[in-house]
Amino acid sequence: QSALTQPASVSGSPGQSITISCTGTSSDVGSYNLVSWYQQHPGKAPKLMIYEVSKRPSGVSNRFSGSKSGNTASLTISGLQAEDEADYYCCSYAGSSSHVVFGGGTKLTVL
Amino acid sequence: EVQLVESGGGLVQPGRSLRLSCAASGFTFDDYAMHWVRQAPGKGLEWVSGISWNSGSIGYADSVKGRFTISRDNAKNSLYLQMNSLRAEDTALYYCAKGVVALVTRPDFDYWGQGTLVTVSS
Image (tube, chains in turn yellow, brown):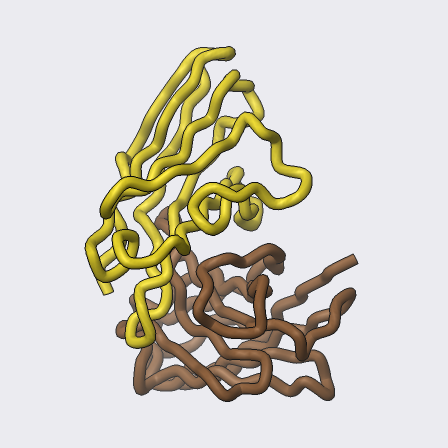
């Protein structure tokens, strides 16, 4: 079970858009439309932001969107706000033997 | 209101055992898969184990396979993680997380507890 690859950090100014990539393999991201994204603020539990690649749970802002191409999934946050500053993790189903794999996490800084 | 409350963490010596518990409330417990996810200090999230609604399907991360055992008691709305042969690298905050479906085949966890800290050290 190898972790999915995410950039260690990204940054953007308020109002801008940013995209966080999540690269896996043909055994996980590439094989299943079962990619989710989590937001984690310091000292808090993670929060589900996106599931099934591009779906938003009730209550999550439509500024958050997800997509996938091949073995790479992406999370885009538009209209950046100060409260978006957090760590973001992608997560994918990886088949019946490996089950679930997370990315290493990306720290988003709002300048 | 959905609540997940973990307990059982603490300081334990390498090679010893510990049992974590997660008390669930606010939803129909036996309708959903449940999972354990851990986070080492200053590090990222790592899925540890998941169990389907009826305990019929169980999965483990390679890092804990053969040492950890997940179980649930639907009558008590409780999830457990028996951790044996603990290692220093098992030191982490252990979260209990609710799946969005009954099976373990989804990486979607819509509710999380606040975690219980396990420290493995001599």
